[in-house]
Length: 128
Image (tube, rainbow, N blue to C red; front, side, top):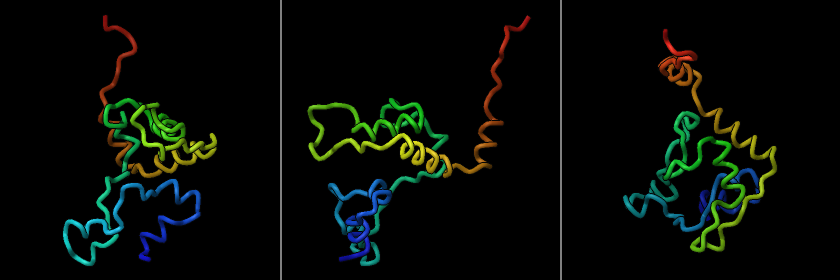
């Protein structure tokens, strides 16, 4: 059993919230490159600065990171085509907040300051 398989089969709840094996080949990028070093390697999108990339989901339906985590905790949106293996995570409020804070921690303070200073100032009154 390779390291990827061992991680995916872990009983650690926190780790299991961050990983899955449904529909994922354990060979990873090896299937594309045929290079032994790529067995178990996967190309995944970055979470760096994710706090600044909303709205979220393919259709922009989730406005905040809190909305996203609640969406997944509740099992997504009801759909007759939803795979029966997809179930609600049933996270507690504390677990939801912990995941959101973890995601926010991936945002660089420098990037956050730069984006805040680059935003146009809104007017609070109509000019005379």
